[in-house]
Image (tube, rainbow, N blue to C red; front, side, top):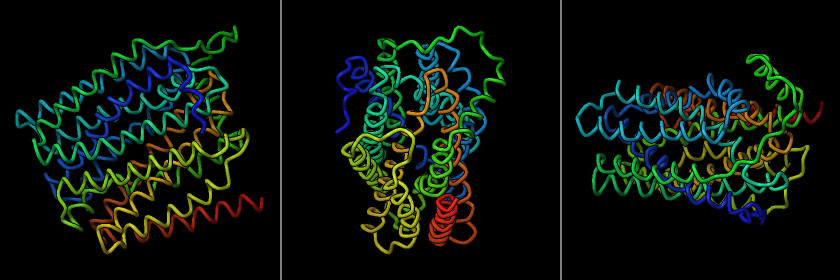
Amino acid sequence: MNLAALTSSNFRTYVAGSIFGLLAIWMQRVTIGWIAWDMTRSPSFVGSVALVQFAPAIFLSPLFGVWVDRLDVKRAIIVVQSVNCAVMFAFFGCFALGWMTPVTMIVLTLISGIALAANHPMRMSLTPRLVPREMVGSVVNIVAINFNVARTLGPAIGGALIGTIGVQATLLTQAILFLPFIFVLFLLQVRPRRETGAKPEPFFRSLKNGVAQVWQSPVIRHAMVVGGTLATVGRGALEILPPLADGVFERGPEGLGVLLTATGVGAVIGGFFKAVLPPQNPGRVPRVTIFTILIGLLLVSVLGAAPTWPLALTAAAAIAFVTTVCAISMQTAIQLELEDDMRGRVMSLWAVVVAGGSAIGAWMLGVSADVIGYQETLIGAGVLAALGLGGYLLRTRIK
């Protein structure tokens, strides 16, 4: 199992602290999703909230990526996570004071989305620099496992708390949980980036060079296309689960928590599955990952057609398994191609593909669900995406 990075006390400190922040984020996801659904009973509004949260990554992550390659990444991520924490307290305050409306939710979610757009390139630039360079592949695996453990526990805890102590107390709990993560960030020692001795490039030329790095590297370009397709349909479907939990199966917030927990279990299994595989070699995307992704897209159709609650839970968990294996494989393939002074720019473009794909996918699926039906939308999207990606892969293989 590729867990070598845990031999670094510096990286262990980060992992131990980040679990609190990740739990808070996943509790927030289920809480906001439930508020949006309970407030409007509209799949398109739930999808719109997801769009607002992830859309800033499409436009802002590349800009933040350039800044990350120039700034003190530790100081920058402390500022961003402090903003995240402040937004969580603002959600609590607005709900407690009775100010929570669709407009208020969109505004707060937008601020959270901007912080998220900055967080992606910062986190992906920070964590490889907490360990020696030869441990970078292990870092990607462990960070993904840590993320998905929180993805398993957070929704379950959030759904249970909403059902027992209410939305208001749940919002306060998740805001407080974020504080230990910020404290831990101050303790980290970050490996210096490579110094070339050259003057810093102009801002937009630096951004252009990041885009060129993606375009000129076949491995990175391939990872972006495949990962983006799965993010748009697979992760997009997982962002609009409230209508499935309550609208289709009438399970309420507890059911949504259970459904999101199932996705977390699938993601954790996917993380450990990837970890027990042989270390990934530079210069290629594993074929097993490509095959798994095609199955994952078809599983979106299975989720839409599921006639029973247990089958829906199984399908959601399987989709999360696939998205996790894909994310780790693609991130590893990209990270192994990069020098430290290019990580922020390139990984910010990865964030555009993943977060932006999820946002656009969630919004499109939500709107389509309002027009033709939730289940019909997932069935059609899964089949069409699998056929489209299969055609791309066949064309690439022949070429």
